[in-house]
Length: 493
Image (cartoon, rainbow, N blue to C red; front, side, top):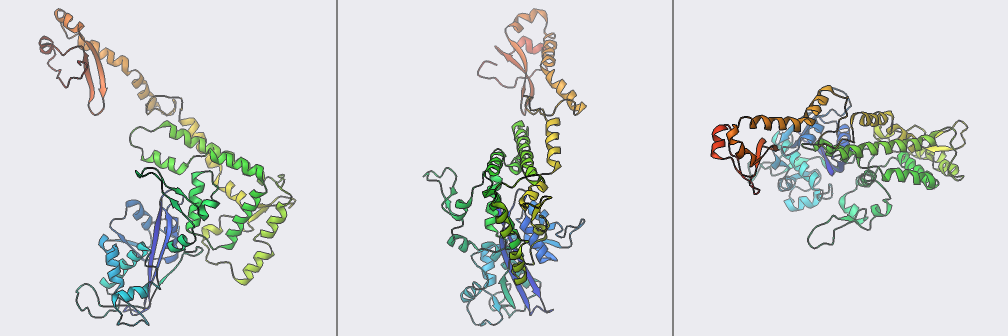
C-alpha cells in the first residue's frame, strides 16, 4: 500500500511571530513491507521537529512511527507527538484558514478567493493532504498565539488575516518532488480499469512510462520500481550505479536468465509474513512452505552473485569493461561532475553508506570492474537467510496433515505430549461412551440397541453425546438425569 507523507514545518524568527515561514511537502511513502514509513523517518530527520501534530484518526502503527526517535539513538524520542481533533485536518477547514493568510508583499485588500489563487502560486493546492496539514498547523499557531493577526471582523475564532513571512513547498534532500499533475502529463502511470460493466476485476497498468520499463518478474520488484518512479532520486552517483547495473546485465544474457528464473519462483515474502501475522486461528502450513521456498530461492540468488564476485570470475562480455569504465562514478567524468557541483551534498546517509565508495569492485588482477549491485545483493542475502531456512527445516514438519499441527516432534516435550493426547482422543471418547452405557440397566438394553451412541465435538459448543436413530425414551431419561436434550437434526439425531 502506497500512502502519503506530509511535512509541514515553520521557522519563527521573531518572538511575537511577525516573521513566520511555513514550509509544506507531500511525498509518497510505503505503509507496509520492508520500506514502510521510510520517507516519514527521512522527513523527521530533515525537519528535526520539537513537536509533531497529527489527527486523532491516525492509526496506532502510524503513531508509533511518529513517536520513534529519528536519529537512531535508543531511548525516548527528542520530540513530542500531540494528537489534535480530526476536524482541524479537514479540507473545508484548511481552505478557510488559507483564505485568511496574508503573505508579505501581497495586498491585504484581496478577497479570500483571490488569496487562494495567490497561494496556489506558492504551494500546490491540489495536493489535498498537504493543504489539510497546512490548515491544521495554521489553526494551531493561531490558537497558541504564534501568528501576528488583524482583528477579526465577523468571527470570534477566525482571524481576519494571519501574517506570514513566507509559504513554500520543499522537498526531501536527495529526492525530486513530482506533483500529480506532472505525473499525469508525463504519463508516468496509466491505470486501465477492468472492462467489466459489473465493476468486477482488477485494474492494470496501461500504456505508460512505468508500463514500458517494467520488466520485473516478481511482485516485490514491481513494487520497488513503482516507488522509484513515485519518488525519483537526484543523487547522480546512485543513478550512475543503477545505469552500470543495467549495462552489466544487458551484456550478460546467461546471468540475467538465471536471475529471472530464480526471481520468478520467489513469492512476495513481506506479504506472506503479514498474512501469517494477521491470521486468526489455525495457520496454513502452505504459507510456511512458500516462505521457506522463497528463502531457498534467495540463497540461490546469493550463490549466483557470489560467483560473480569471485576473484576468478570472467567478465560476461568483452565490451563490458569499456562500458563500465566510461560510466564509472570514480572516473574522470564523475570527477568533473563533482568539480562543477552537480552532485547533491544532501543525499541521505542510508543511500551513501550502502555501497562501496568506489561504486565497483575489482578482482585481484583488476581485469574488469564489477557493478556495485553485486556487493549490494550479497550484503542483503547474508548468513541470516541460511539460518532462517535451517530453522524452518528443523522446526516445521510439512508432512503433518492434521489441522494446526506443523511443529516437528522433539522440539517441545509439552507439545509432543499434547499431540499424543490428541491422537489418542478417539479411543478415549469411545471409552467414555462405553462408560456411559454401563449406567443403563440390562432390562433397558433393548432400547439402547435401537440407537448408535457417539461423542461429537462441535465448535463453540463443546463435546456432545450424539444419538442416531431416535431420541431417548422416557425410561432412559429417568436413569440418565444429567442428559439434557439440545437439538434434533434432520437425520433423526
